[in-house]
Length: 342
Ligand code: F6P
Image 1: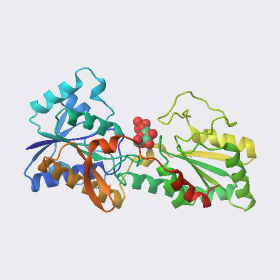
Image 2 (image 1 turned 135 degrees about the vertical axis):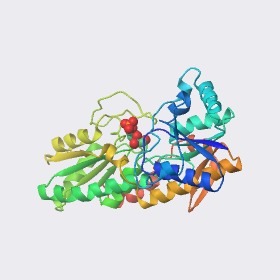
Image 3 (image 1 turned 60 degrees about the horizontal axis):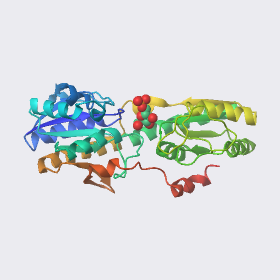
Image 4 (image 1 turned 135 degrees about the horizontal axis):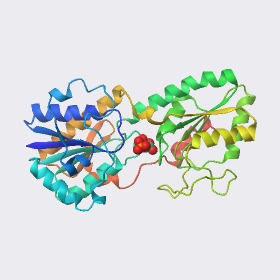
């Protein structure tokens, strides 16, 4: 059997660990031949392949990024895209695909599976917002990077009696902000799921200064102020929740806090640092287990499935379970941490 592998969407620490596990087990246990498709769905769409054997996977376990490259190409948005993919799979003698990606990449896999393409999915995203799985790999690395940044910002904020606003990734879900905020001892965490009241944030900042602490405010990039509040919005674009999106919420928030409280504030935008570099041990472990199960699913002919972490076990669930609805922070989970924030 000849099996194609691709990685799509934003890169994420642990992608190479999945590829390595798929190849190692595919070759050694199942006698498969593997072929890499470059740059997400662009690979099968344009017939862009690379050799993918045990040799190509040496030394990649601790490396961030993906040796296959990635893109956000969606064949369903391209005329004749699906037919081109089917033709290219046939031309390269590829019987089945392992697609490693987030909501968009696995959304394509879900639709292709319905059109009789033999595909299994592996969920990835630093945002941890895919349903069906307890965790996605990449998330733990991102949280550790953000936590380390918060730890470092405490000392500089205290030395200068400043407010430090830390903007982390998370367009639709506040998992990184919540986990890193708890782990880093932040004084407030603002997430997309719960619009924030700027007056309350400022009141809290002032209280923190009274008790001689410099506040660290962690904000997800997709966080928004409450509608009808007096922090104005700059852009009209709406996100998946119908909230108006802000560009550069970290900077906006720091200037607003400074103007309202008279306390000096600085913003730090962590951005793609959270996606780069070496994966944590947890992410390597999870990614490896996903890879091993994915190639077993191919061997079992269990197509149309996605690998999922359920407790400590890896389960196979229908692809549609991961791509139907985003997994967001619940009111209860957010409320639980408020004893430290606000
Ligand atoms: O979905 C992962 C993610 O890192 C988001 O947190 C972020 O909003 C987005 O990707 C950034 O995408 P890009 O790398 O295309 O700017």
